[in-house]
Amino acid sequence: MLQYPESILFPPVCEICGNLSVAGKMLCDYCLEHCFEPANPDGSPSCPGHIPPDFVNVQDALWKYDKKGFLQSLLIKLKYGGQRDIGRQCGMLIGRQWTSSHWYKPDDNWKLVPVPLHWFKFWKRGYNQAKEIALGFSTETGVPVCEDDCISRFKFTRTQTGFSLDKRLKNMEGAFTVRKPEDLRNHHVIILDDVFTTGATTYQLADQIYKTGVRGVYIYTIGVA
Ligand SMILES: [Zn+2]
Image 1: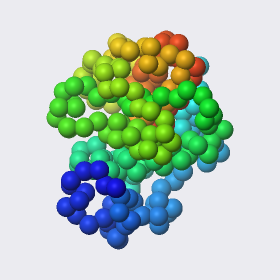
Image 2 (image 1 turned 45 degrees about the horizontal axis):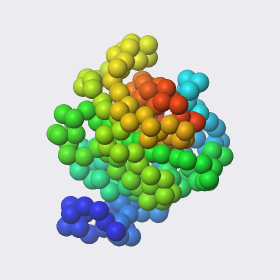
Image 3 (image 1 turned 30 degrees about the horizontal axis):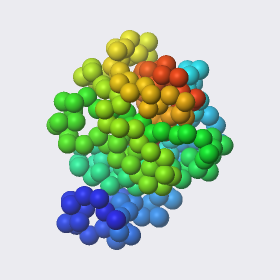
């Protein structure tokens, strides 16, 4: 089922090729198969070119980020075009990738954490694209999403382009506060976001989550740079 009215006003067509798609799907099977490059074909604990800190068990993604390509335009639609269903469908695909990975342990306690948006950005955009991804993941896998007030984001981060990783991490210090650590403690926590670039933001969040006494921290995104 489609989740939002804007999707009902228009017939279900694939966001890439424009051909009629199955209801509830923003991407047709053909484009899913042919338009994107898998981010981590070997199923390694992290995508090529990324070395996560020790407190991150896995850093994985669906597809390689392609500047000016299909994935970039898709993520722009998800983030700025109000097309929340893209997040839902991609979240389901990430969930499917997770259930067929080595890290999938269905009997353990898992919890999903969408990277929170600063309230001002949330107010401007009206939704958090990472939450849409988490809801899709949850639909596919049954893993619950943490409450919206579990973690707060304080800093309104400006673009960090041109900063070194050290400087970016410094810039993000104190950006997140876990308000309900008891909701995460003793869980395997999966952080979800649209795209993973340097990891400065996500690692800062992962660090805060790790300190609550979780059993593992995993990062999954749609795209990876
Ligand atoms: Zn298509």
